[in-house]
Image (cartoon, rainbow, N blue to C red; front, side):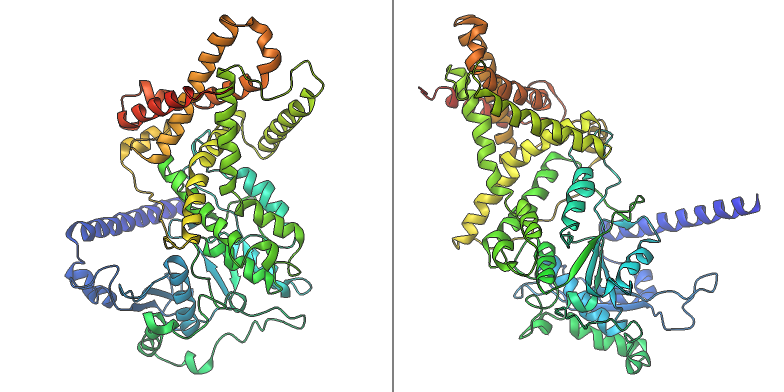
Length: 551
């Protein structure tokens, strides 16, 4: 009874402290400055003045808790770990290299202050869900027989806001439990940028040698250990300056690599090609949990950035087939390329969603007749892949509805995210644009969240991606109805399906997949529906496509 009361009081205290922190942050955002009271509590805040911006400021660093200070203990007397606030220097005239630049600055600063041999990288919108994850990861690194060649331990990405039927396919169950587990069998997990434990030496460029053994007692420099907090702060600040990487191998052979939107994947590949192995760790209890996109626009933009970066890797000197030749297993090379070749997948998808439908409208068969033996291979491929995909989803805990939503989102991704990433990558390769890092927004209003929780697709703006999705949806609806009227009612009747069955099935499935799109186009009145301008554009484009003479 007493312990329960203590737990409740501790929870209420923690909740009150959290609300106080939340109110202070919101007040600072609203006023555009930090209050004088807070500046007195933390000297780091005093360096944020009205003259500096988030894109133009000097290095701001403060050691909030010094782990080697005997007085840094919690209420039970346990030693607290070192806690450092860092805002690296940013200047308009210097490229800050986005996430890769941030992690590299943290690597340099942490090497000066603590120099821990294991580094954990976690995205800012993720949190730890298992206090034992670090201990479990260390078991891999410290294994006396097999741990010496492990560079990093990758945990899967999981999210706490996935809807019941996984509306935007954010659950990643098939990827986490099937694909990544299979890739791990080839001797290396893909570094996905978050929830990953790194051996510091490997991420900083060390090549693997058979005689390598980690000295787990040699991380602390006795001279650095005697320095005061002020001395450590002063020595560390210069490591986060814009000029600290000049004439060095940072971003090339050391730290995360620059110049690619998926700097994590290319860095992991480079580490494995230096002779190191990696481990995929997927325990029953999720190690880290984050926030998934809650609108269709956010979800597609996220995949656009990922696929663009992966395709850039394939077209660069780091192509897994050439860069990894003789360094990593062929199976691992092929595994990387499955993801690197996402963007070109858009073209066969567009073909199968457009051409068979138009030919069905005009009564032109593209596949063998149903009465022909040559129809069987096509039927087998379609049926086998669909059933295997369904079995795969059910085996990892997905429902049929989740599997259906997954297939819908993959159609949308191939129509939009992969197409745009292919075009942007080609334009970049021709030298007409530079690589940009697009941050996926996660802040939405209450109405959007309500619709997301009710599993309603969120459109709400005139995005070119939505124009493509709605055009293909309208095209398939028109060709399905038009084809049935033209070929069945006014044509050969049901006998026409002997030649057009495959196209009828493809067109019909696309109409079923796009039912939420039709709802957003023609029936929904809320702000999450498809805008009128997009609806008009899609109807006009679909009508023009249907008028194309095909014979």
